[in-house]
Amino acid sequence: MRIMPQNVMWGCPNCDEQTRFKGLCRECTEYDDNGNPVMPVNRVRVGHSQTEKHIHKRTRADFLNQRRKQPTKKQLDLMKEMLNQTSHVCGEDCDHDHEDDFTAVGEAIKDIQDMGFAVVNDMGEEE
Image (cartoon, rainbow, N blue to C red; front, top):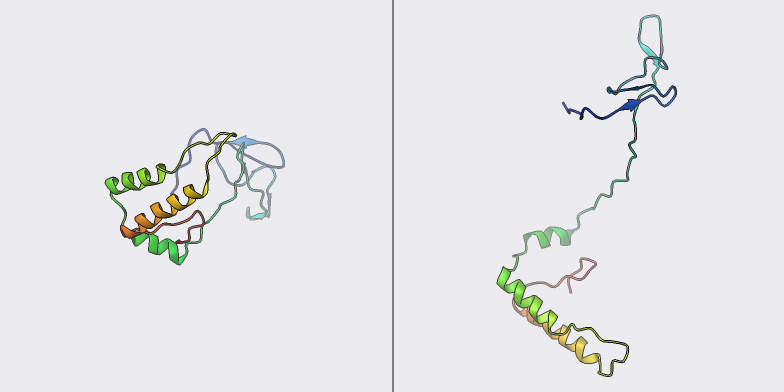
């Protein structure tokens, strides 16, 4: 059984009657002679908006990455240091060749792969 917080209010969408209990609205629900609901009107949560649920379907790569050996903190620091060696901010009046930066990043990625770790791009695919 799920316990709802005490400050949650439920209201009827037809007559705007509010109460602290969810269920059927007693005023708007139509009943037959035996007391069974014929046309039920459910109360809705006041001030609550439903959001879309984004369900991530796990792929084979997700399962493989989950089982992959994770790097230690020292290895992560070494990887960050190798990648940060090539990162610097250039201004508008930059006069050096950026091809050297790309080759240095490629070498850093190759060094990380040589350590036995996979390099995964932003799309979750292994490079």
